[in-house]
Length: 124
Length: 259
Ligand SMILES: Nc1ncnc2c1ncn2[C@@H]1O[C@H](COP(=O)(O)OP(=O)(O)OP(=O)(O)O)[C@@H](O)[C@H]1O
Ligand SMILES: [Mg+2]
Image (cartoon, rainbow over all chains, first blue to last red; front, top):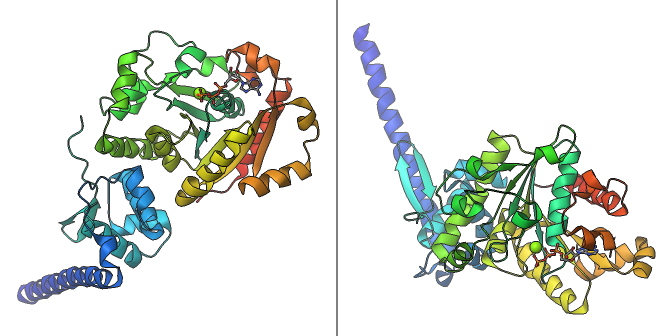
């Protein structure tokens, strides 16, 4: 009885691990797809990568909406941004990854969640 | 639904401050909980107009991340009868503070934008405010642009002066539109004869010129000039025609849908 329970737990943990890895892979694929879709020039890393209002103004329309949404919290998951913009989570995830590539956002995995955040530096 | 309203214009002296103060008073008079902020850091004026004394902390301090928003909100609810609430957050009028703001870099402005955007969480979600009103500097100053990005609704004031028309049009089509801002226009200081002909035809003409709806046409009133901002019209001059116009404009803002 106990033994069976143990095995079940072990299997569950393995499945969880596989799911987590798949999610990571998915995200990496998202980024790759975006990189191919978007014109290289647009994704150039800018030397001054502050996400301020001038930068927001110069972003393509679809990214601007995502960027404004993340400025509100400073930190969010694709899901939370999708809630604000009323767009699909997968779409926001790919836009957020574009902003990461452009150097405006940073990305951090915490457990199963991927958080995107604006690096605001030291407040002064 | 709660809204942030920014009052802005292309040129100076078009009536932003008068409109902000009195719109805030109108919403408060309707029983709402309102916060009015002076985002005109280069020429702060709410401090003088609202005759606030012994202020220690300013909106500047909140944007500098030196204090929480609660610390800078001054309760002026006693100036309005009824159950509405009116709070104000003031820009520091000292020369040092004005100079300090003018030397900020892009990273500071980015953080300032974050602090403004987070007012939605702090004042709407946590403290149940109904309206936040921003009085701004004219033109595309950083603080004004931050205010507009943060706002749900932009009230543009213009005197319809020919040098203002083109700039206002460009600002609407090249800036507000980029951020998908709901916008309404107020034609202010209109001379009497034009005001009297204020009708559907005129509203249509304005709509065609600016491509945004007309919120109201405010004639040039000597009482506004004489008041030097001392009256809250909805409270102190309740039967003045400007007060009626304010209620009409407040109504249109209230009814506009935002996403
Ligand atoms: N409808 C009006 N009738 C008469 N005077 C008016 C009217 N609207 C505004 N004024 C006067 O015009 C002057 C400028 O108004 P106000 O300070 O509100 O403009 P502003 O847009 O905030 O200016 P600034 O760009 O300098 O901040 C004030 O003296 C005010 O009393
Ligand atoms: Mg003013």
